[in-house]
Image (cartoon, rainbow, N blue to C red; front, side, top):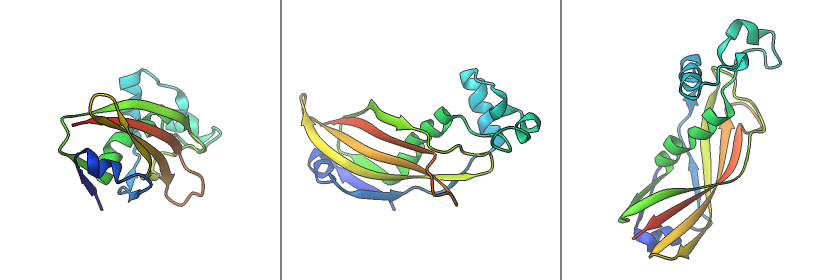
Length: 152
């Protein structure tokens, strides 16, 4: 279920809130290949299913940065921000990829609003703890703290 926040006051009230989980998304070989083309990263563990079958993961895996890039569409499922004039991605802290995402696996995002504080220019800065989960796995694909700024 999507949480909706109207304006900076409601954003500040989200501090400490668990936003839940996005829908599951299957990682297809086509998605991995498209990402490889976009980033010019054609390492065989991502794009060569035949060779990767004999590799360390038993098949092709998604790029770590592909997994990271999914934070944006996943996050829009969890939080709808209204009543602000501008929102910006301010960056990430401590990104880790504890477990590879095998092609064919399903992933989803879990998010918690770690903190929200005021910033100059009539804005707030949100720190969000993100965890990309792999269906059926105890270890996440990605953990990161994202920082967003929103202005009135």
